[in-house]
Amino acid sequence: MKVIFHLTLIVLLLILVQPIYSQKKDFSISVDVQAKDKTTQNLVESYITRELRTLGDVDIKENEPFYRMTIIVLKNKSTDGLNIGYTLSITTSYRNKCLHSVKKDGKPDTYACYVSSGHSVHIGGLGDLRSMCEEVVNEFDIETLKPTRDVFKKLGI
Image 1 (cartoon, one colour):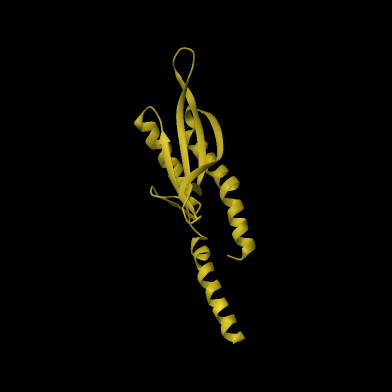
Image 2 (cartoon, rainbow, N blue to C red):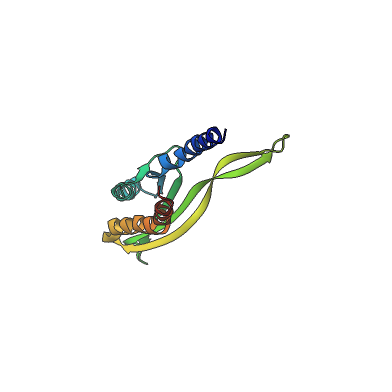
């Protein structure tokens, strides 16, 4: 009887832990870039997505990503109206379960929502746009993804 109980317990644990193992390698993210002109918008989106792909464990997807990165691109102008560089405002958020209401049976009714996890601003000259995007992804990797990777490593996942 004890053997059957222990085997059942082991099987249940394996079933419950399997989703954690299957999620360990891919961090999904969507990237939303907003700029006044389409050329700058496309350029920043291209630089950011290219850098994210070089991380190796990041999957860029639009539908239900775990992380969201929103970037607002502003052109910096001199007092006489000349473009002298760019400012990037970056907000990152992660998907979480939020409480919608409590059902009649007392169970929570939740939905997926996004919680802000960080904000940064990067300022650079006209020729710095690509390196600024590299810096944005490096910052996201170190401040957001690395701690998660470290937890997975400690758990042996």
